[in-house]
Image (cartoon, rainbow, N blue to C red; front, side, top):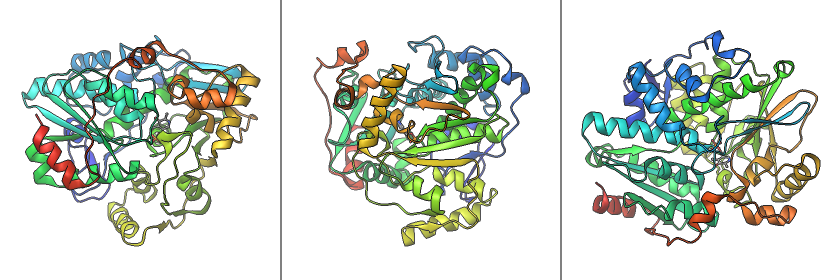
Length: 452
Ligand SMILES: *Cc1c(COP(=O)(O)O)cnc(C)c1O
């Protein structure tokens, strides 16, 4: 399968090339040239083991690795989850299900994308003999997941920018306490959007990117999206047969990567009635789906920090499909967004979508409600998914992080402190981090001095 840029100014590339580049040279995002139909055998009664399903799905897009190689890459990626189902579906009531995506090594759904990315990088370094420097920005969980995917791997260094003081202490510790010497956590004074803007700027400096053999880990990498598609199918095949009509997936959303993956599998034939975009008080997408206007605002820190985002990078992919794959139109809209600070999307057809918004107070209230009503503890991001629930049909809420990552908020809501053995261990360790000024030039200089 070839991958093309949403802005139409770059040559189509193969799976491994799209993976290695991250961002397309024209500044656009890679998408598959076309979306194949899911083989109907995938949607059978019983759930396949996760790795087998991942192979069935990913082999539709990866025509570069032979079968055996891809099996090996997938096994390396998903063999170390703490639950043998990888993404188990919990039933809370007749129509209410939670898809637990927090059983990977860093306890958030980001492990699904970044474990695969780590294995693909490892394979690439072995195959080409060329070392790489991985650069990304994180609102907390991406960095931790990327670092767990690449810590200690030969021939790779990882540089992760994050907004100092705006991620939880445990999220920070997951990045700074690995003990691996190829990991560079970089706190900056600013927001996640500032961090992401620096990464984008450095990544679009093509000669610098080439000189340092830079690779991306943010949700702009199309492989992360593809990896995340798999658990939507996995969820579907775990639903009782009576719950397979009229399904809503409710997705705590920031950068629009996770929910976009679901929407993509739906385009490939997964029967889904509705996607619910669940935002926190940073509600750009809530406003978009209600007004058709996309207008980034200032970020306001919340109890769900991994969703404290105003510039949802993956939205460009959705726009491209909304424009019926018209890359010229997408390029014009992205230019207009940059120039005017907002865009109004004509004929915005979001019939498959609904959106909710949760304030910090709602997050606490929802954590309490879920505990009282279902005796189940959700993290603050997942709590956003419980806003305005419609239980007249099947609701699958994506649980995006383990509650133990956010002990303070959970304690405030229900007076309990959830724990996890992996997190207890890192509380005792020394932190290693590399503060750099929040400018592209300062980060460029730091990378030049420390890259492999
Ligand atoms: C990253 C993240 C989100 C937001 O996901 P997007 O793909 O950016 O929409 C939600 N919850 C948690 C716990 C996250 O880490």
